[in-house]
Image 1 (spheres, rainbow, N blue to C red):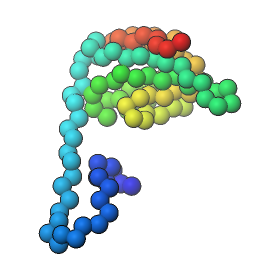
Image 2: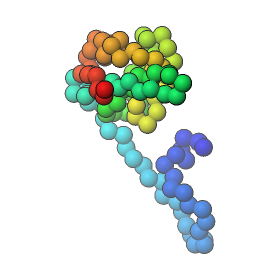
Image 3: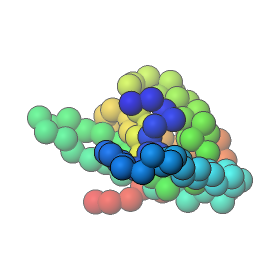
Length: 113
């Protein structure tokens, strides 16, 4: 699926010959200052005993969260991704992520058990 089709509602068929699909244009929220972000860092356990550090709570543009995810992956030296407004980093790197976010000016804290 191409990027411009992601916002489409699943319309299968229309009998109206004059039907034109109106794409829903959702504007992204402006990214607030780093000090106003309230990020939470979780530790998730996946199958097979694998660990995953998850950063949630980011508000702003998609490009900004992807840039932050790239920075965290590079500084931790591991793989990861940005999915559904969450940054996923392979392994247990909560302490390092919180330190990096604090250095960048974000407010971040550990969450979960």
